[in-house]
Amino acid sequence: MPGKEKLVHPFPPIYDENSRILILGTMPSVASRQNRFYYGHPQNRFWKVLSNVLGTRLPETVQEKKDLLLGHGIALWDVLVSCRIHQSQDSSIKDPEVNDFSPLLDNTRICAVYTNGRKAGSLYQKLVYPRTGIACTVLPSTSPANAQYSLEKLVEEWMVVRKYLTCL
Image (tube, rainbow, N blue to C red):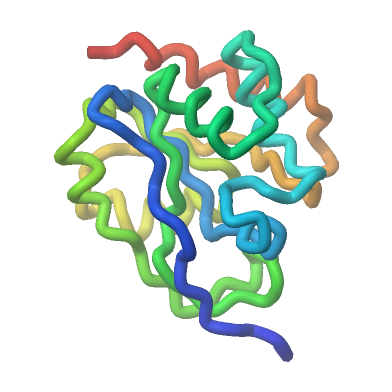
């Protein structure tokens, strides 16, 4: 496939010592890389879904997004540190290399892992779970390519993350 470039993850995970849940995507999209932050495509519904699930206003700036995550004990990252990918198409991923989750897991109180979409879930299950032993829950993708899910249906499915926001 033309244009299938090797991509190295361009930004660090978001977490602190109070993070209790971890939400993982696959790799940042073209728009996210251009905007230099997670879920930067204007039609991606991640921030809308999360703010609805948490009952907060929609964050607009990168700092507001970080504050929303950390203020609710949520860590955010991606499964892969590098791969070959065409544009933002998860289905085109080849040669995946996973992130080292040890520093994040050693310095947080993560008790649940969620993936944003099936591809992130399958990569996590195959390449990360054997190392961490922490199972993941696969949630429907917030990508605009996942048109079968309305915003309301996504919010309903993602409500499960609230279960672990108070875990010890």
